[in-house]
Image (cartoon, rainbow, N blue to C red; front, top):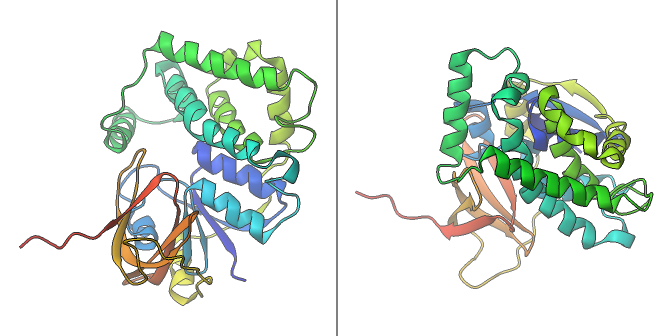
Length: 311
């Protein structure tokens, strides 16, 4: 099997989620560092427009969104499991909450003026301005909470996690870690990037101790790879087998777009080649990467027929 390649950057919370999971799985992987903001020409060559970080590559297959990436990794390396049978269903519900609700409380709170200078350490005023404009373009309709409202929400969520650990369990749902732990850990990691902000965690000692237990898994064994090398891997790599479960209005070979429904609404256009209740796969051709299959989860993404180009 071709190597697993993670396209990421150091300060991405969702990338940290994946790095910790690769450490938990004790997997070897290739590391490609991507730009923090647009332009991202090598990213676009592989994804066809998906700009969020991270994404994962295996040969000529590109996997978008950590919810899908985690499933793929767990299938490749079943032990130790990310989805233990004892917590199946519950773990995924908690993970989905952590990836959305907890994340969107932790990030704006951490990126307040006292925190952003630590998260983007060494950034010039122009860099900070460019970063702000890039993220605003990803979320043009986002209503950011006031600092007091954001702090209240974050404290509420942190106290709930503290309560989950009150019985003395090592991890959120029991003695064994699961996907819920890694999804929640990314937000705690991000808060800790900014020491003046991280004091918000002091009131939650069980949560801090839990985070240290997750953090000890590390990032696994990785070697560096350039984006040009990753594109060459795609150009010569195989495609994973796909399944197609027909649905009304969706057939193999349809020209479609797949677009995130929450933020960064950048559509990826391609030919529909794979479909299930959990995953959609489109094939697209790039002059450098060749024919790549781009995979998305169904939850959080919309499939639509491509609109004909206007005259």
